[in-house]
Every structure is written in C-alpha cells, then in structure tokens.
Image (cartoon, rainbow over all chains, first blue to last red; front, side, top):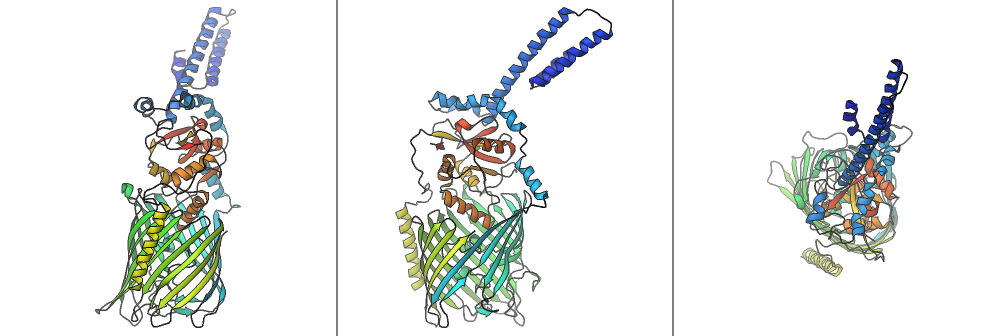
Length: 466
Length: 174
C-alpha cells in the first residue's frame, strides 16, 4: 500500500488507478485463500473500500489541477497571471471567462489526441515513399501577343509567348526542388544578333535548382537560377502574367532575347536574412560559371555544362525591407567576372546595380539603375554601359494603368555587345484582370535609337496562369 | 536631357499617385473590410502547445502570415494555418495583418513560391476543430481562432504584448 501511495499521484487516468486497486484487492484475496483462511476479514475490506474512495477523490483533485494547468499552458507561461493585474481587462465578465470555461474541459484533449489522424509530417513522409504519387507541383504560365511597329522589315504578327511550366517539389522539410521549363517560339537573339530558325519552338530549362533551407538566415541553392542583379530579375522570372507590362525592361531582357546582363547563373548561392531588427536586411551571395565569353557568337550565352575558364563569377546583393515602410525595398548588388574572348585580351566585367521600390497591393513604383563596366586587361580602355528604368502603376478595380521609361546606352566600341547600341523611351499601357488567372494588356511603346528612326509600337497581350 | 526630364515626370506622376491614393509610407492597408452588425469577438492567435513563443509583434505576425519568415527561433519550420476563403476570421487576418484582399494574397504566395522566397503555402482548413487539431499535431503550426473556439489543445499567443481580452487588442472578428 505504501508503494501504491507513491505511484498514484503520478497517475492521471481513473481507469488505470481502478485497475491497479482491483489487482491489489484480488491478490490479497488470493493470498488469504492459499493460506487456508475461511472467513473474510470484513474490517480489512471496509478499510480498503474507504481507501479506494480516498484515492478516487485524490484522482479527481489531480484532474482538476491538471485542467487548471492546461488553462495556464494555453496562455503564455509566466505571463498569464499578470494579465489580470497589470493590464486593464475587458469589462465584459462573460467574455473574460469564456476562455477559462472552455479551457476547463480537459476532456477535449483526449479525443483529439486519441484520434488516429496522422500528423501532417508523417503524411508527407508517407507520400514521399509512395511511388504511385508524384511529389511535383506544376503551375503553368503562358501568353499570346499581337504586335505591330514601325521598324523597317517588321510585320504585324500574332506571337506565341513563352509557355512556362513552373515545377516544384518538397523533397523533405529542408530540401526543395524548383525548376522552370520554358517552351518558346522563334530564334534566339544574342546581344542583338539573330541565331537559329524562325517560327520553331525550343525548350529551355530556365531554372533548375536544388534548395536547402536551414533557417531564415541561411539557405543554399545549387543549379541554374536567375542572378540576383537588381530586383526585377529575381522577381518576375519567365511569367508575363506576373509582371505588370507586356515585356521586361530591356535592361533585364533575357540573354537569348537580346539582353546584355548575365541573367542566368549556373552555380551555387546562399541567401537569407541578416539579423538587423526592423531594418529587414537580406543578403544573397552567388558564385557560378558566369556568361560565355562570346566566341563564337552563336554559342549559348549561359554556360550550363562547361565553362570556358577556370575563374568563377560572383555576385553579392544586400537589400533592406524596413518593417515600418510596408512594401518598400532598397538594395545594392555587385557582380564580378572575367571574360576570356578568343584572340582578344581578357575583359574584367563589373556590374553595380541599385534599386529602390515601393510595391503595395494596389500601387507599384519600381526604380533600378546599373552600370555594366568592361575593362580590357592590359589597356587603359574601359567601357561603361549605364541603364535604368522607372515604372509606376496603380490599380483601379480590375484596371491598372502603367507607365515606364527605360534607358540603355551601349558604346559603339563595346567589346561584348556592340550591336545593342543606344535605346531609350517610354511605354504606357493598361492592364485589365478579368479574373485572377487572366490578364489582358494593351501597350504603346516608343523607342529612340542611335542614328536611326525612332520606333513606334503597339502590343496587345493576353497572359494567363493555369 | 530628355531622359532626365522624363524621369522627373515619372517621379512626379508617382508621387501624385501616392498622394492621391493616400499611400503614405508605413500606413496601414488600402483594402476595405466590410462592416458587420454583430459585436466583434477577439481573434486569437494560437500555436502548438510545445512552441516556446509567448508573444509576437504585429510585424512578426505579418511576416509569418505572408511567408517571409519561415522558422521559429527554436528551428522548427513555421506552418501557417488559414481558414477557407470567405470565412470572417480569414478576412480579418488578410485585412488587418497582411493588408491584402483574397486575390492579392493568392498572388503574393504564387509570386513568393515562384521566386523561391516562400517555402510553403499556407494550410487551409475549413473548421475551427480542424484548425485546433492541425495545430495540436504540428509543432511549428500557427493559426487563429475565435476566442470561443479556443481550448487547451492549443496555446494562446500575445500580440504586441496583449492578450485577446486586454484592451487595445487589435484583432477582432465580427
């Protein structure tokens, strides 16, 4: 009985307690029978029954205490008590006591915990092991455009935009796969030079990343992704539905669409938050193959498999999202690489980019500027290519008028992309979202070109996600 | 020179639009929440009982419910639990915490997943019992319940150092 006294306070279930006492009682009777006793000691039985009553009362008391503990546990510990004393409370006693009353019913825990529903993490694990299920989640983006302009040789055309299959998979709690497989029509345009046949479809794997997430401050990714130069490149990727306008700013145009920046990088990156309180600092550090050194011209500009040099490109970005300024972001990035064109001196490439933007659900103001510098080794020559854009839009119901001005000035003697030249001009348009999956855009563009007639253009586009 | 003038014009249009929209930096949301006739009840932020967190600031809540914060301080991954679209509790969270409407919230998560900045989208459950059960089972889960739906299976978290029945508690559901 002494041992029982010690054990029982630790018990919380009435059934277990009763079972133990019944067992003890039976064993006592059994002992009496084996000793040959013929009469039952009525006094002992009476004592035991009284003891059972006492213990049952004790269990009830323990359960009540546990209910109170549960109430405290539902509140932030150590602070529950000061709520009623240090802070003025609601004057409605019914509401004030509502939690206490509901929390007092500890019985709610048992059925919840006892139900055989597996924890989601277990379900996820089972799903991963089930070969009959796919781990992939696929989201699609596409667009169709109608475009006409005054550029000599251009015809008005319907154009199939990129068909973008965005595929992700949660391989585990920490590992995730992310890719963008893009089907796109038409020839490549590498630094202003057309490469490949017209009107045929190609398949590009634009992003292909294995991501590891350790915590909010440290995430790793390896594979092919978008270089963290500025803001736009890592915000909109290959979906025209997601961006306000019909096209990316030409400063951030893709490499195979005439862009001048190393938009994609094959390598590894680390990213995360920087402990900075309400300043909301974030960092990105990347290392990779860098762009192809442009020899010969028709080569794929992104070095997916083999690099033409041992040195690696790196990129560092730091940006802030202050808590006090919802939707505001500002940051700087610095990209460094060394190109080795065949038969030409080495070229040191440095790209310094800055951005400041404000994005609210109904309002958008993007501003980015950068300088792409190519310094030819062993010579005093260096070529600076400046560019910027500023874009503003505001939503009125389903309509969002927008305006952008963009500028890019490439020297005639630029050693990497002289064909791009100078171009700048405004675009103005209207985006209409008839529902949450479709966007219809109408846009006017005017582009000033060096030593050429300016080009007027009109574009209608339907972008969608599916 | 033309570029400079145009850039200044863009900036002017942008500023005018901001002023017109009343969109001052640091201001609240520009999403309207319909008025309701019934008296408001506190909307309680709840987490798993094993979660050591006691208090979250409104900014913390915003970053958690918008997916920009993915881990608790103890290293557990955060799993956000939302009620289904159309539920009043969800609308309060979207409006008061996220500053968005339903469509903007969906687009935000689609964009975040697309960029890789958001690791997982929220878990959507259709009843308070489902929310409680999920949070009870998942150590890193966080969700919200009406005060009358709270029971001991979940832990109530202070918001900006206030409990749901404290004066000045900001989250209330009609």
